[in-house]
Length: 360
Image (tube, rainbow, N blue to C red; front, top):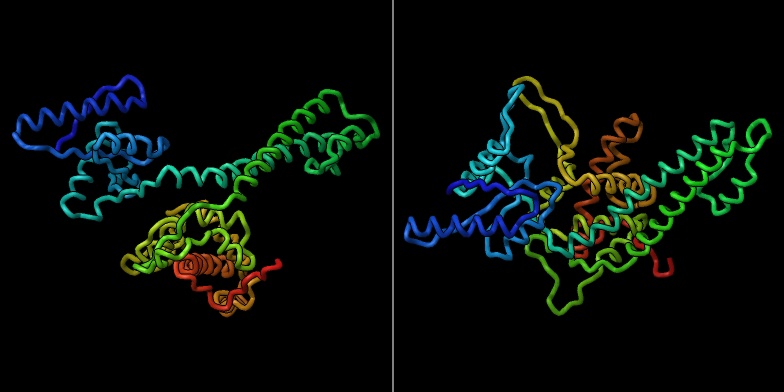
């Protein structure tokens, strides 16, 4: 296994890379007199997986490595160049090929359909942040003149703005009013985009539930809509169901531990010598999924009062401080994720959980 570098004038020139790889392959086959297998590797980053897909089309094996899984130098200052990084990737790939599965780990390559299905709920999260920013900006501008009753999210915001007066009973300054109107225009555009994205999220998710430990539904049985299944549970809303379906439940997991690790909800102990303490959850997984699960956990213990998970939470937190409740809610989120995974893969409803009636 060897490493080759090629100078590329600009990014995205996959065809040039393929030509270089084929030239190297032909040179190696001529020198060795036998067929040569080529394997490529690169770190997961902002470019996504398009390069892996393009190389796969050309018949070239390619792996996308998780950068966090690489062993690195822990000295205060370490050399970091493209050449050093390439050599590190090569050594990790060589060790992995020799059978050392702890040398590195590779990310799962999603299909184009799976990647595209995640766009709506991730765009919605960004749009909500923009809505909050515009709303706070408008309220901040009006607070400079003593106005604190204006609600930018009301439908009659334009009419209310036309009647606004300062705390001294005078009309708003012209430039301030013009800036607020421009902010309202941006806010209205964001609200329009939020409505469009939410309508897109209302479409059925064409995601097949992953099988668990070799258990799968009969081939002649129709594939259930996972989002609809999750929505049948009390306190599981549409947005949460979409996020869990398109980010988690479309994947295959070895066991419940790997499932919890994907969401970053596994425990992270520190045990060295006489020092033994817990550092909390690892937070090394999907932050979007983890945030949704923690929100769902709080709703679950409030509305799913007959659930075994809620009973477990109440037994361990009754009479304790708020800090202990926040710690325990992470364990509830982990238990819920495992229970929902079993629910969509085997149809086993979480113990004690209430199902919405058909009229609801």
